[in-house]
Length: 388
Image (cartoon, rainbow, N blue to C red; front, side, top):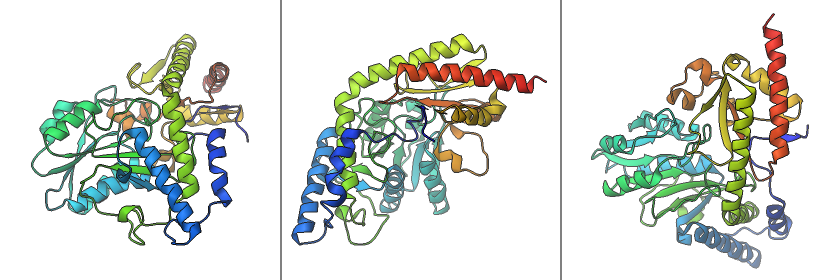
């Protein structure tokens, strides 16, 4: 079914037509393997080198510090596991926030089984970690700190410049998962003293199945995948030239249009909050009102938490696509409440009742108005059903 209103851009975005146009010549016309020595291969290699340089310039780093991956999950796994095993002689302690994406947290659980020790930093009611507490947690065995730039469930933006300064002063590698923030809010690799940074394509109107890991020159890191030695020996696998072209084009568009789009999406979010506050007495916002991604809002309605999934399905029947938190977590068959929402102080019942709205480039004021009317109608229907 084609959705009339799509408000789940934090899960994935539609490919921008300009990105598709950039990719089209490489779907069939440039199909060589970039590792081959013949002209087909050298053509692909030239494109690969050009795109790597273009992406590096966008974030202010050297082209040799960009390593293309299959997406954010692989890049995060490479960052944590690669640093852990390459630096095991130096130390075996890793620090992450308690509200990281599942691919970070599950990597940490696995690393704990391999003999590493992990500290999970608590957050306040807005989702922020305390940099000073982080500083106290660093010890001589600490080799890596990983704190996401912006949270996928509640949109909170971390103080990564402060975190980076601490890590730099303590001589500890600092990694950030920037999948939700890249192209949406400013990010300065050098001011934040980032050692590694994860990026992906499908959150910024590019194709799925492609991402990148920035690794500062001189970082000691081990590969996850072993094979033909592509990507400087850190990520063996034939490069996805077409996907990389789309990824870089999407990144260029987002960086170019960031300021204007950020203002527009912030305005839409404020309209949404005002509309929700007007219509629902039991409304509560998850996370901060201001220090969050421009087009992101997580909220709940007291008394409706137990019917969130039913509510979302009814909205879907009306052509409205929203999320009950992280799309990735929908694969969790244990029906656990959101670890992010529990970390900011919600109980398990409230943590299962969140509705996440994530706007994007193609979201309009009319979409927000349609959602508000549809939500009001859906809630009234559920209230009627469960009042008898």
